[in-house]
Image 1: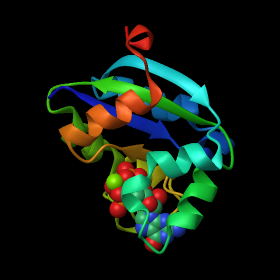
Image 2: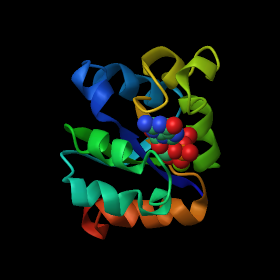
Image 3: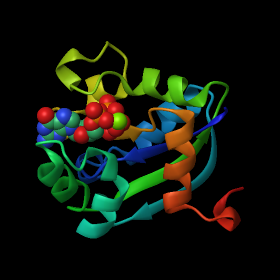
Image 4: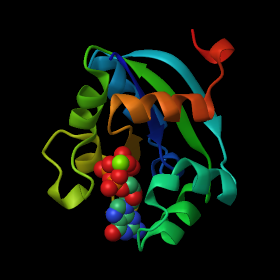
Length: 137
Ligand code: GTP
Ligand code: MG
């Protein structure tokens, strides 16, 4: 599949990194098919991360994701899920490779600057969670 969902998380938005992260995405050859700035409610963040409901960090994660605005976007590229995860880097910024977004802009495993879908199946679910057909260009 060629689509994935990306999020610029509240930590990166607060630090004024939206522009730099978008430039990385464009430079890597992604086509931005949809994009908006949103502020999730706690309930909306819980719905988005429902798969992590049982994890010990679920409360912290959903509080953080609803703590401020984030940029949600649909990214298009060949093998999009993997290509975007490669550009993001490892979940823990301390372990992320040089040149990745999380290495440069992440501060901790919780506040790690960006999100990306982990499979084509979840990409379709996550895209539909935020975007209607009319919002896709
Ligand atoms: P996403 O692209 O955000 O899904 O990251 P990931 O797929 O690399 O990680 P995973 O799906 O395992 O975890 C989802 C998100 O939960 C991560 O991006 C982190 O923001 C957060 N997270 C994971 N582990 C921890 C943790 O130990 N503590 C906290 N506070 N957050 C965590
Ligand atoms: Mg994940």
